[in-house]
Every structure is written in C-alpha cells, then in structure tokens.
Image (cartoon, rainbow, N blue to C red; front, side, top):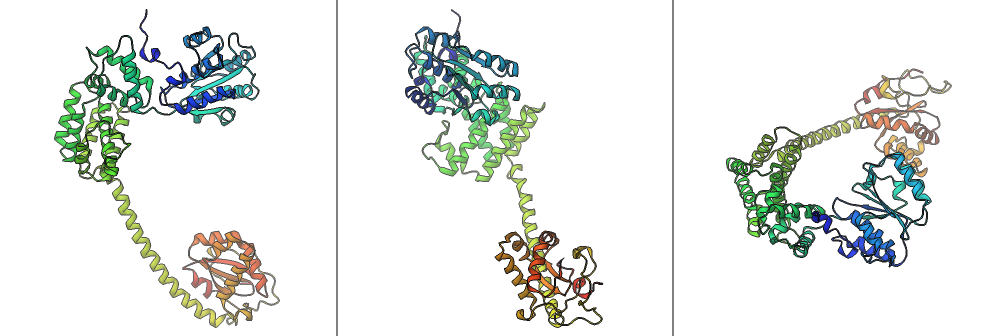
Length: 541
C-alpha cells in the first residue's frame, strides 16, 4: 500500500479530534443538536488550523446514516465517501483555480438537484476570497435564495477580502492559531499511536511545535520529514537540522556577544553556524525570538502564562539586565527588517552582517533614527515657545496702542473724514489682506456699551451663542474688535488662518453687528502685524 503522509493519515475525523478549536466544535455541535443549521458558513483563519477538516466533519455530521448527528459514525458508506473525497453530495471547489463567473454559474445549476445519498448537498469552497467580483455576485443570488437541501462552507485565510454582502448572509467562525503546547501534545499522541510508533523526544516535539507557527498541518509535515531523516529517535538536533535552525546555545552565545558589544565575536559565531549549512533567515528569526523573550522577561519577570520557548531563567535574567527596553526593541526591529529583506536582495549575507554589526553598537540605528527627530522636536518646541512669547509681547504692545487710539477716536470722526450720513452703501468689503488700509473708527458704538469696543465684541459673541452658532463663536473668540465706523468694522486675529476661517461666517457676524449698531457696517478681518494699516489709513467712500 502506498505511503500516506502523516497530515493526511491523522486528519481529524470528528469534532472531538480537532485541536485548539473547541469554540468552533462546540458551536457546530450545538447547531446540529438543536437543528439550527444555516445555509452558509465562513471558516476563516491561518493555514493548517483545521478549516477544511472541520468542513468535512460537518458534512459527515449532516449526512451520516445516523444523522444529522454531532458524532458521525465514520464507517457508513456516506461517511467513508466523504472522508475519501468520493461523495456525490459533498463537492470541494478550489476557488484559486476555479475563480471565474462560469464556474459559479455551473455551481448554481447543480444546486437545484437533490442529494443522492444524504440529506444535504454540501459545497466546500476553499480559498473563497480568490473568486472574482463577478463570481461573488453570481454566488450572492444563490445565497439569497438557497434550496433547503444546500449548505455552503466557504474557507479562507483572508476573510477581509470577502464582500460584506456575502459575509452578511453567512455565519462566520474564526479559527485560531494553535498554541505550541497544543501542537506538541498532539505530536506526542500521533507519535505514540502511529503504526509503527514514531520515536521522538520531548525537546524535538517542542522545537517542531514552535516552528509550525500555529499550524498543526505544518507540524505533522515537519514530523514526517524528521522521521525520514532520523536514524532512531528524533532528537532536537534532528529537528533543528530539518528546520535549518541553529542550536539554542549558539543563539545564547550570540546574544551575549551582542550584550558585550563584541562585533567580531558575533560575526564569528554567525559564520560558524552558516558554515554548517544553517539557514540565514532562520538564524535571524531565532535571534528575534530570543530578544522577544528578553523583552518580555524584562517587562514581567518570570510571570506565569508566558512561553519562553525553553530558555533557562538564568539566561533570561542575566541577558535582559544588559539592555534597556528601548535597546531591546531597537534590536528586534533591526533583526525583523533584516529577515524581511533577505528574500528581496541578492546580497543576503552582506545584509545580515550589516544588521549583526548594528546590533553591537551602543545605540543601534533603530534608536538613532528617533534621536534626531526628538532633538528636532525639542528644538522646534523651544523655537515655538520663543515665537509665542515674542508674539505675546507684540500683541500686548499693539493692544495698548490700539486702546489708546480707540479711546480718543471712537466717538469722534478724524479730521477731514467724510460723514457717513447720506452716503450710498459701501460695496461689499474685501479682506484686509487684499486692501492697503481699513477705515478708522468713528461714532458707532452704542452709549449703552459705554463706547467700549471690547464690550461690543463680547455682546456680538453672546448673540451668536444664543443662536447656537458654535463654529462661528469658536473662531471669532480668537479675534479682537479694533475699529468701528458707520460703514465697516475691523476685527484682528492672531494669524492669517483665523482671518480666512472667519470669512466663512461673514453674514452671521454682520447680522450680529447690525442688531447692536445703528448702522449696517461690513465686516473686515486683519491679522496681527497689520494694525498700523488698519488704523492709520482711511477708506475712500
């Protein structure tokens, strides 16, 4: 009989066999037990976490001769047909290679036919996110009005690419990455119950479990590979050999050399590892994992619930004390960037050597990059503070000048100034930014306000507040009324930005002014620094 790979031989056949996805198993089991079976499901999650296996188990549970049942027998013709991939009622579709509208149209034609053996016709669409937009639209019609005997199970590693119109018509189950402990436990079970049994030690199972990165299928494939290589018991050395990984002791030595800022020793240890055929990217990833452990240990100590990947506590404590948190974080970034860039460059070794030398610097580049920014930020902050202080002094000086001028001129027109009475209405005012002068103040402030420009401005703001004109008030409260006559009034703002913003509320401001004054002057705005022109000049009528 042909050899069957371990990941196929040990694929879970019941919900109880599924590892690390108890939340999915419980929910699907409850749905079958209570006969609350939906017509569409989305199984999403990382590769190798059991999405397709769960879909097949669910199909067997629905169509088993004893079902629907949460515990399919696995021996009836229907169960065996589904397990072997020969069932006429369970169709597996690879959306990566059948992603067009024609394939979905063909599927829509077949859903009309009743199942031949079981009670349901189950369509398992793998990598459903690969379907085209047109294909999704064609599938949507079937999901909207599905036949009673059809169940769709859509598996994907990228659920965010599935249109929301599809997601809203299906129940979604998120499959989690399986923890290293769960994977190691399953590997031990497989090794002990396999025929023939697979000799493997605990450190080897832990090494393979960590390398699988949450995917049980990957772990079983690695176990299969290690079993082929080993001569007798599978040891951690064999596991590291198939992974191209370096020994833990060497990783600890490299980290210690980095802590001493010993670049020659760091490069020498790395060269020795690579000369033995180890994978450069895997070496960088192992170093990254170790510095991650140092970071967490420095933050929380030997707290329960953290996976140190077998690193002794004395190593963690000793080496974590040699770095600050920022230094560890910077080194993790350097290693991550180097591992990521290896596949993008033809000079991978040079790239790695540069990264390793950067690790040994007192202040790695990852930290240096931030330093200038912080320095510049501080310098900018100091500069801003000086600028604000200088502006404040200028504003105070100008305010004193304006108050002196307005006290003497607010109730009497300047010499040779034309009387506003009898004149035609002034044209729509232009922003002071675009005019060389603003009219000087003349009699316009009501006696009830004591001729006080500040009181008039406060009254205008109060009018707008009562009208609930919050955006206008938020802008105007930064301004200061500096001049009023029968044709226009001038407000000063701290910057051109406020001037431009205030112009959006011209109509509101003029209306508020008109309700308080005996005239209808037009609104003008000026920025700090242009008061001389605003007060000293005149406007022709």
